[in-house]
Amino acid sequence: MEAVLLRPSSVRPIAWSHSVRYGSFEGSRCVTLRERHEASQPLTSHGRGIASAAHVHGPTGAWSDASLTGIWYTRNLVDEGNGKFNLMILCWSENQGSSIHDHANAHCFMKVLAGQLKEVRFDWPKETEGPDSPLKMGEENLLPLNSVAYINDSLGLHRVENPSHSEQAVSLHLYCPPFDQCLMFDQRTGHKSVSKVTFWSKFGERTPFMISSSEPIQYENN
Image (tube, rainbow, N blue to C red; front, side, top):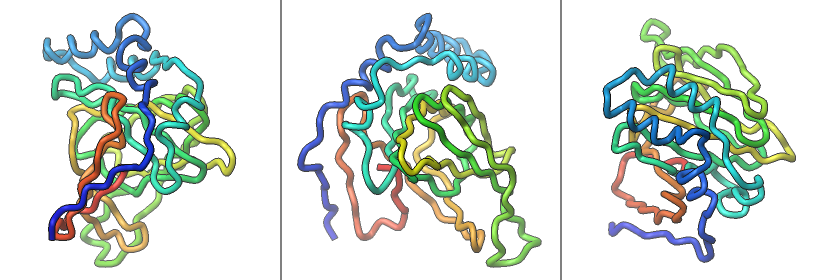
């Protein structure tokens, strides 16, 4: 069947994304991050420093009006890092959350810019546990405003959610290297599926979303 192009009937420009990309990092940290990659220098500690120092201009309402939906949280690409990392803003309406997922062998840094988030970690499913075994839940971490978190696949899987019934949340994420798909997991059975990760917007412009009935990959986060 022919792919269907879905376009929102009314989407305003996401001006805050341009602000994040072109001047909201103290000491030109976005440029410094690119320089680190070009020099093949270690990223892990530097990425945590950037996430800790990141400051985004503009009230939460500016993000909410442009990129919050009632169904999914949204992933908004800010910088592609010359193909070596992705820097993005995630916007979460009340009670929205991600699936349980891995990180495709990437380093993942996160900072809460508005509201609060909750991270729930899970162990990787083990072959010795047999089919249809539920995932083993690990620690739960409440991430208040300005807190920083880190995860990679050696630390397990996780789910991130906005636990508030009345407050929206916004977070900054750095993924290195970037990836376009990851694994999603069913908490009850441990079954996994491939999810193609997409962007609600890129560099302040809303992205169209392509759906094809013949495509076996599940799409999320658009």
